[in-house]
Length: 369
Image (tube, rainbow, N blue to C red):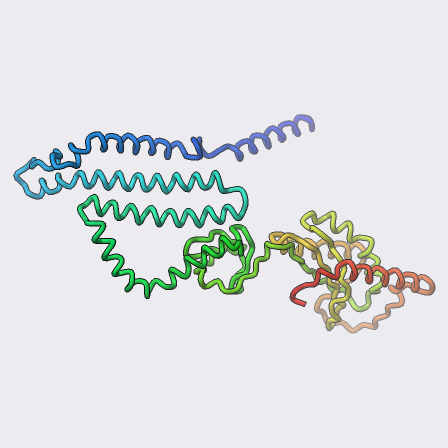
């Protein structure tokens, strides 16, 4: 097989794989799955039939009110069939309404992260609302007086309210979080020292998932302080050490000539990287600080990539990165440092580069400094 044939075969295989990936999971009609659409038709037919045969099924002259056996238990069970049918109808309609509204919301409000946040909050709210209404309707179908029950609920609410203050606080806090746009689904936040991506803002609690997949569930009312790291671009930092016997001027000129290449090697960098200068003088090393502006989701990716690219650059140019060791040596920098007129020129160029870098990256200070 020739190289051209092999390339064509690989290309066709890749295209087939891509086609499989983008293949929809199922046919959808008006934003609903086929199963949901069929359920809607069945529920519609059942509702029409119940309405047409109202008296025969649920009225005083219902066929289910007649005694079909001398056994009292059998007659009692038979008489409860209308209530059972009503229950199935109510539960089915409630389920379809909940699923249908969720599908409609996803289709109409699923473009931006803010809309996704509102969708999830509305889904939770509608789910509980539909469930409460369905429960009262089912109780009514079984002969329970809903009006009396509501009156009793009003009395009980005074008692329960004392114990439900935190729940009410959570709901109100959740509404404020969404409509004040403090953070959205997909934002990277820090809540009580926990850093992760917002997975869901519910009517009661917020879910945050860290990079390891651990889920933290926080009650909305307990979110007192939060750091939203997705609002603005972040500044990632990288500290690389060089040995004391290295010529700092030589290293700075090396960086001047190669920072642009490092930028090309790391496409996630939005701005930079910049050389901030000597961050500290360690026990056995001179520590150089680098910064770059990135999206928050690329923060650690860029930091690791910067470490790698600078290490490769130093290795290629015989710049020593110190590591713990026990040595007895006489350090002579005369071999590495430029001499005579070259020394003055090199120092001047390095000094100009260092000052320019400090100036251009002045606004990009690490918050931990």
